[in-house]
Structures are given as C-alpha cells and as structure tokens.
Length: 94
Image (cartoon, rainbow, N blue to C red; front, side, top):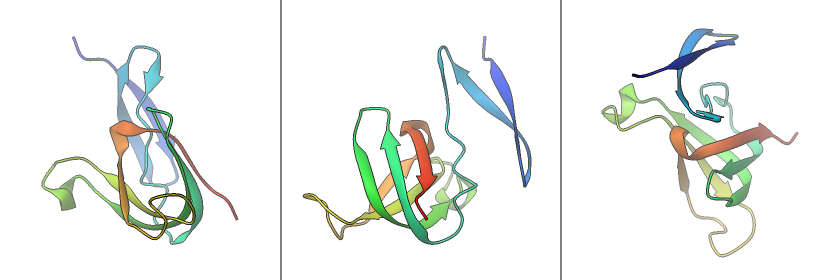
C-alpha cells in the first residue's frame, strides 16, 4: 500500500510519497538562482549557489533535482545534482 501526505505550497497542492518517518523534500520552491544549503539524507551538506531546478517531466521522469555549485570542499565549483528523494533539507541562505 502506498501512502502520501498533502503538501501545500505557493504554486499548488502536492501529494508527497510518505516513507515511514520521513517525507520527500519538495524542491519546486527553489526556482531562483541564489546562495543556499542542501542537506542530503546520507548526511552530506552542500553550501553554495543553487543554479537550477529541474522537474521530473523535464528529466524523463527520473526525478526532480536541484543543481548546486559548492563554494568549498573537494567538489568546489562543480555542478552537483541533488535528487528530490535524496534531499532531507534545503534552504536559501540570503
């Protein structure tokens, strides 16, 4: 049996897959380019410029994702795709 929670945002109402104690992060609120922080469910944290949001539709249904360019660390300056089901938290820092 698949369960879901209802998520209300400024762009509409969304049904979000419910996986036990966690809920899938909705990334569609991150459509502008700005400095931000993305925390993955595996504990990795990226701080840098959020440069893109790609919908599942635009990605052949492989899932929506944010692209962030880290400002420090081994991946500094690279383009990191953070898929919606891997993100535990995301926020703008400005």
